[in-house]
Length: 326
Image 1 (cartoon, helix red, strand yellow):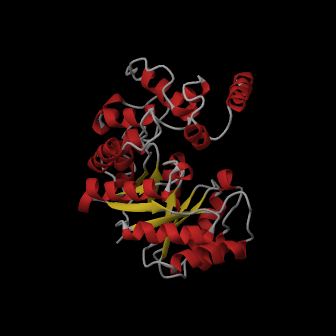
Image 2 (image 1 turned 60 degrees about the vertical axis):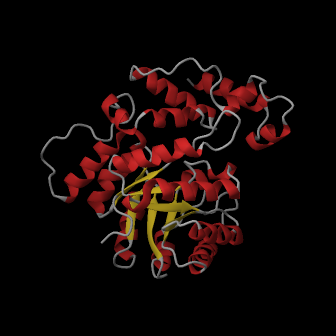
């Protein structure tokens, strides 16, 4: 039996306009995702903007997720990073807050060798009794966890699976061939879910499931049941074809969350998608923290400016470069 099921969502973190975490909206979103068919939620993953969260905010999110979901679903805490001792500390914190498992992303930027990756993940896993899922996403971290390293790590008792987002199907097949029996391989890219399950994957740690959980659930269940012939529509067409009904199942909370996203590019894309669905929200003006910063609304507020990071000129340059590419 799978420890965490087949459909897991890497849940976003909602923020208020002042930069504080909106725990109430987060709890409603967590409930909606479980209602929509999710078996587990990944809290404070990179989709949840973990790099900008304080330790106190992380703990608050774990507790709120457990309160909202209860026994209906499991909570996996994203506690990985490139500081081994900090990841161990955050993993123990998550355990104290009631998390059921841990997600460990590959260390980014410093590009450790494979032996370094092995020792890093092994040390974290051995520091807590919680089950660990590795996360390989070289397009983001510039570090690939190769199949031999995954096979070695699968021998550690509480490293029970991997979220594979490399897009390298030769490597993914090798992981499935060489890892310990029962080692769970999850798709880390929504568009790869079906072909990965065809190779032997167990499911997906999804982001698209914020709006199409039901469709993804149907696709996974149909595959597991061997129903590959009955047409079910395009369950993973999450671009222009997102059905409005799928959004209704998660309620307005899903949209409220993303209006206050800390990433201005992602927030703008979400707003554009709402317009295509005929669900344009009221005009909120600059509706993310970074956009508010760019409009000078937080000028002179060092705590907000420090938290958001890059200066206005950089984002203006990024927008100009993006416009040139388009």
